Image (cartoon, rainbow, N blue to C red; front, top):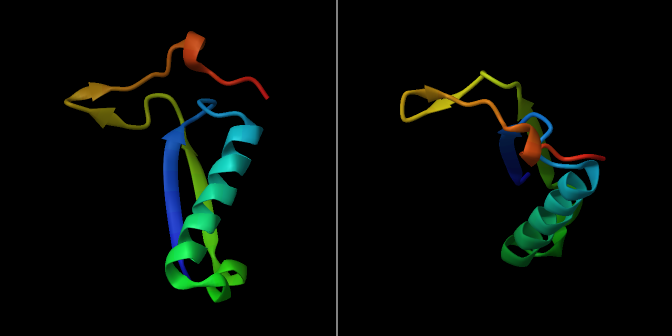
Length: 70
């Protein structure tokens, strides 16, 4: 079973954008593994709370201007 796990900042993507990621990722995996993989493909999108991760020794908080609205 193909499995993909995306970790994104909380509120960075709208529901529509997350749905698009699921569909496009599933299409990509079906292209590589054949259509037989489509019904078994799992895509997990996990939202990480502000302050829950860091890069280059800086804790990340998503600016309000970049938050998605559903």
